[in-house]
Length: 394
Ligand SMILES: [Fe+2]
Image (cartoon, rainbow, N blue to C red; front, side):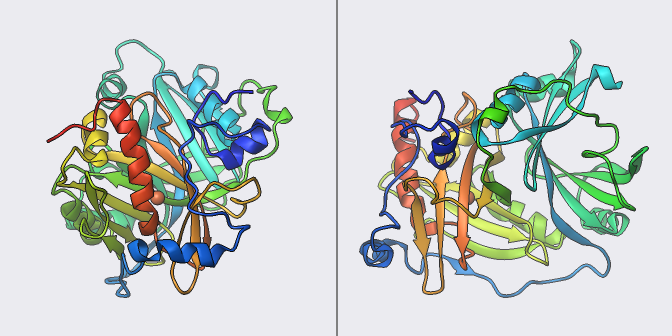
């Protein structure tokens, strides 16, 4: 059966029981079943000592903390179909719904779940929704908000505000018969926002106040094996040239995140283009946010291609952690140091614009971000970029 879509093979093998397609963005550096480390040594010269890790966690909030990624909200043209696509192709299941039938008159929300990963797909219900309409015209389908669960939100918001963060919505509480939840919204890079979520006592509902059961069941889903993805590992933001440092500084200054890891363009490049990246994280290092920017090369960087099609900065990829990446036949990227290794596979863009894609990652005592794989990944993306007519000279 031909594979209609570009999704991780490890999942496709389960979900379609078929051979992988050539259109899936996978590479073989080597097979784990065959002498992992001896083959790995062949690639050591281009991916050893590529990254900088930081030990200093910097300032800690006097009170409160960022706990974890809570959910990711996508603004899309057709939330029902987008949610179904992620369920059918990536192993998610419908969890909750908000729409006309539940009293939500302006925006429809389909919530899907896979273990601890929660994605919310939203669309405008009525003609003339300028905010969502303009977002869609500019960015296409993509990520609108990355929500964090926090403790002592009032203190975190006050601190962020004092340090220059734009608070889109001051803290407010929503409740239903299952409990109470406090929210606030902070502006980050581009049109992306961070919703902060604090549970005011235990919340016993499906997702958050106001959400009900999904309206219908997808009869295809029970016929597919369960997904293998467990939690959000990191969420990467692409920035235009020279915007990486100000954005990572914003996280450090306003949210008291700290630098965790970085690479520069001397370290990561192909013959055509390169990138720089700084990973920022919260004090407990449970939320990782790599921030990328393009670096000059002979041809247009893929980060610049993203910015061109996204209409500016935005979420480039969401990495989903699995403990089972090698259950299926192997076609994965591997990066390692003397302590451990990580395994990665990447999808092609999840929508028609060459913007957001997903990563599936498995870690074994290795907390980098695949610097050693960037070159292979970049070269593969450049091939696609060329096919799109976008691997152009600056
Ligand atoms: Fe990644």
